[in-house]
Length: 246
Ligand SMILES: [Zn+2]
Image (cartoon, rainbow, N blue to C red; front, side):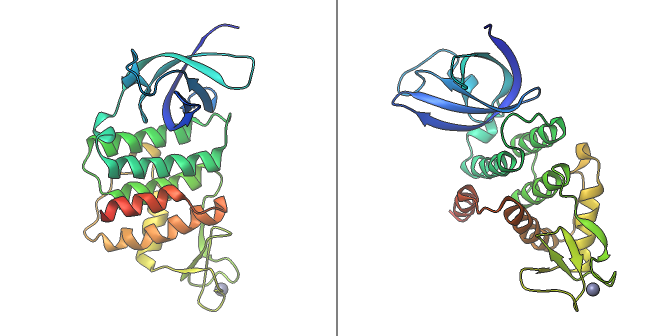
C-alpha cells in the first residue's frame, strides 16, 4: 500500500506509548482519522512544527496493517501559530474539536463542518474576536450542520410565543408548555440564535453587537444544546473555563 496525502488540520494529540504521539486529523476527504507520529516526544525531529496541534496542511500518511496509519511528513499551509502560543485559545479550540469529534465521529467527511472549524481557528488566530462569540457561534453552526437545526417556529406544542428553548428536541416552547430542563431565553437572544443559524457559513462571525450580554445568554443555551445532544459533559470545557478565569 502506498502513502497518501491528506489535506486537513490536527485537532487532537495524545501520547502514544513512551515516545510517540497519536494524532487525530480532520481531513477533507476522509473526515476525522487517526495517525501515529513515531518518536516525536523528548527528542528533536525534523518537521516537528508541522505536527503541532491545529496545524493545517497536507499530511503524508502511510497505511499499516492495523487500522491506524503512520504520519510520515507534512507540508504546512497554516500553522495558526498565534493559537499555539495562547493557552486560552488552545483550550477553547480543543473543546470545539471535542464537540466536533463527538458529533461527527471518525471517518465521516464533512466539508461544511471542516470549513466552519477552519474559519473559527483562523478567527481565533488572526482576528480580534471574543471567546464567547467564537464558542457560541461554532456550537450553534455545528449543531445546524450536524442535523440539529433548531426549529424557530413558535412553541413546538401550541405555536404560541417562544419563551424557552428545549435542548433535547432543539425547539422552542411557550410559558405554559415549558418543563424541567428547558432554558429561559429572551426574544432578543432567540432572534440572535436564528440570525446566526441562518447566516451563510463564511460570514457566520460577521456581526457586531452593542451589548455582549446577549451573547452570554445565548452561550448558555448553545452549550447546553451541544451537551444534551452529545449526551456528554466535556472535560475540555471545564478546562477552558478554568483557563479563562486564570
Ligand atoms: Zn405552547
